[in-house]
Image 1 (cartoon, protein in one colour):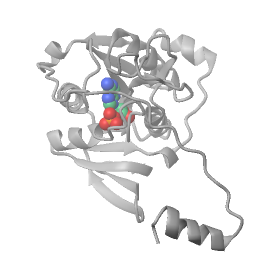
Image 2 (cartoon, helix red, strand yellow; image 1 turned 180 degrees about the vertical axis):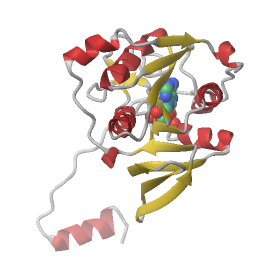
Image 3 (cartoon, protein in one colour; image 1 turned 180 degrees about the horizontal axis):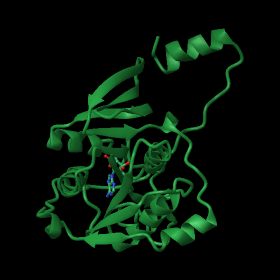
Length: 249
Ligand code: AMP
């Protein structure tokens, strides 16, 4: 049982990001970059499946600039067996990532692909669903529990109304939600060992994929500042304000 797990390099979730002065994008120069938090959960799940004897090999994949090697090394230190970087200059859109991942899947033939449910930079929440559609595989998005069998996987999904449990025929695509697990702390000896693990670099051309941008960013701006609230003395004053000032009742 082979698992492909995806890891995206994003601005660290503790960092407050700002728009660039010209409003063309988010400023990431000199910003601490890390593995997308949902991808840490995806890697952790793959490693647990291997530790419990349900998986034999974990391949971590990232698509982006050469510095993405850092997040791949973290995935290797967490327990992935080898890593693949598809090196691209610009940050690819979800559809382009899904197309490259499809080509990687055809090359590596995994039984299961685990992605994060969403990358915290673009908040797109699209790549896993697009990949499943391109491959024609079953998908379990927003997984909070995953049990792997020989031919199928049982996935509990967090949906608006509660929890939904699906049985997916393998091969399948799963995206990891927050409650799937708590990622391990990476220990120093494992970081050192990870330096010796295989990290292959490919180009989109090696995967016979041409990246064409479909989206144009018009402007990146700070959200409007929230105005300070007011205190009312009692319910009667609140009702009067809602009726006369805000005019919502
Ligand atoms: P998104 O659809 O952009 O919100 O991303 C959903 C998930 O797809 C992420 O959590 C990653 O697991 C994966 N993903 C998206 N972009 C990349 C990328 N450039 N490299 C590796 N994985 C990615």
